[in-house]
Amino acid sequence: MTIKCKKCKSEAIFFQKYSGLHLCKKHFIADVERKIKLTVRKYYGIRKNDVIAVALSGGKDSAVALYVLQKILGGRPDVKLVAITVDEGIEKHRTPSLKAAKELATRLRVRHIVKSFREEHGITMDEIAVKEREKGTCSYCGVLRKNILNRVALDIGATKLVTGHNLDDEAQTILLNHFRGDMERMVRLRPPAAVEGLVLRAKPLRNVPEKEIALYAILHELPVDFGKCPYVGEAMRREIRVMLNEFEVRHPGTKYALLRGFDKLVGALAKELPPAEVSKCRICGETCSEELCQACKLLGKGKEKGMTGKV
Ligand code: SF4
Picture (tube, rainbow, N blue to C red):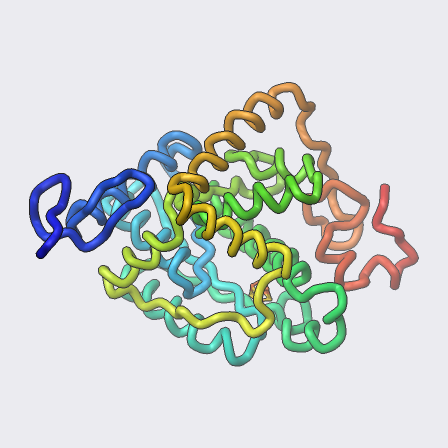
């Protein structure tokens, strides 16, 4: 027996457990795009002469972000989309994802900039992983990648920097920060966080579950690399991911509830807090909150000059 779409009675291809809706291909696609448009409108807005840089990793999330933004904004001559890919120097992982990113940018006719850890920081993640394994490779990778993305986005005059964070990523990060008692990071998570010297970060997929993004990418046959990085994520995040997925099965809507609660709580809290104090890194000039930026600290540049990294 075929199950019918709740909206049009065509054959359903997806059951959205948290809403109770069976959806056909057309209405599933429309639902994903509606959520993305709503998020863009509510938090980020698109203005005349916006230059939107999209961090394109070659994975499904950033591919869907670029594809949908191109679909929504491609017809606007006053808005420019640029894709930026950072090659971290993870040999087995990066080759296929870089290829997928190039293919998508070419297919969508979007300008594509590729920068590498090697050329920007003089080291690759494979080299860092050998030397610094005990500190956790992902903390290095995240900081060094963000540093490059922000610099390139500033160079091209970008007004927004889009990342592919989805609902699952956001819900995991909210719980992770709760478990660590890290309120500062919590507040920083709230969109939009405009800070001088940092291009405004935008997460248009934050209201779309990871599973739906994967299906959207497959239905559109987007060139995507589904491979996993050999250094994978932090152990605690992995545990939270498993726990949240189990909760979502037993209590559909848990991830949405976490995000909604967080937005309300931090939205109210952020009004009470003074704006973040920012300064310029004394080594590279990057905007940061201390004497040295995280990237220079991690690369040990402060030690060479006898700096502590604290103000
Ligand atoms: Fe970098 Fe960690 Fe992601 Fe691998 S899993 S790409 S090391 S952040």
